[in-house]
Length: 477
Ligand code: GDG
Image (cartoon, rainbow, N blue to C red; front, side, top):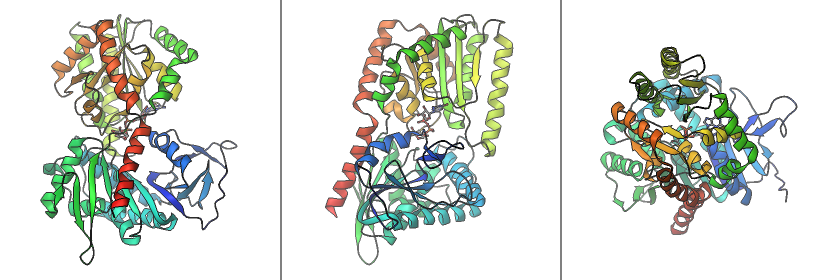
């Protein structure tokens, strides 16, 4: 049934995320000029949003865009306006050039700039205020990710009646690195405003709890941290792992579609029918280990351990954060490497690396997963890595080999992948060769075990586990 929202209707369940779940649609398309954005979080929360009186607070994705709250597909969307300066300082600056590199173990050097921090605080407050205006009395609010770490505390102060959850999609670093952050106490205090703080891996929750003990000496018991509040009050913040996942059944359904299977065959033909297709799919990001992967593959060609006649690597690098300097430099390095490897090894009929700096439609991604004999996930640090789980979900034929970095959260669950340390180029090379040569029976044994994991632990289970923990927190207080 259609719910009718009036401007004063308050929501019992509110998601707060950097981005709204919609993008501006091209002229004449979409619902009211908007269309659902393809992101994973949107799909993850869709079933939850459908079942409750939900609202979603977030940025509409374009600077200086002022839009009144509106309804989309049964959800109330509450836009938060960001100026061009906010985008530069809060988003590209503090979120993506300070927190992102610091939390991914300083693979790139974090930049600590006070004006960025000021903007981060200001914008976090704007999100908290929008959430406070939107939430009904006693509502549950679920804050998403590292752009909004200060929101839980701000919101708790504005609205002590709310139950507040926070989920951290990226790693939480060891204290030795975290302690670099000039605002390390303020960020922890921000997060500790939540009743449940969710992380991808047990190790992330551990790093967080250790940072809290070092800086605040709060009492911790099991996963619970007692956080003192105003005048003698306190609350317990639960810091725990809730590994995120995908809509595995949806991916498997796509992979069973005859047109998509035909497309997979066509892709292989287009590549000159190599014996083996290797695949990498990543946002173009320095955390993903794309350079290490290209280095290993290039050396294998140079050593004559693989031949371009037999093997092709398809690398999809979807454009990302294109105004941040580290990403501009990374793109140049990767494109130089791709050109060099291809220049050295291509023949007129075969290419070593087919490189796409493009976002592809979901169906095309699934066809690629089906076309790939070996999936290379060589992240240097990654909260989870959903690409690894998508590949597994799509292999309804129980074939294919996943090479998976131990530095990706997915490695905790996908124990029968070929695990690798991507910094160790020689072992990475040996592992790629082993994957290329893996007999079908062994592929099947490993893939079946991984498929069971991913199908049993899908994204619906992730959100319901988290929300159950949040409901228990509510019951306790
Ligand atoms: C963050 C954390 C964590 C990529 N290129 C295309 C495309 N994609 C899709 C993939 C996948 C998603 O984007 C990427 O998710 P990942 O998990 O691999 O990585 P991040 O973007 O860094 O996500 C990560 C995640 O949050 C969730 O918590 O796992 O660790 O860094 O779904 O398929 N999709 C399409 N075309 C592309 O070209 N359609």
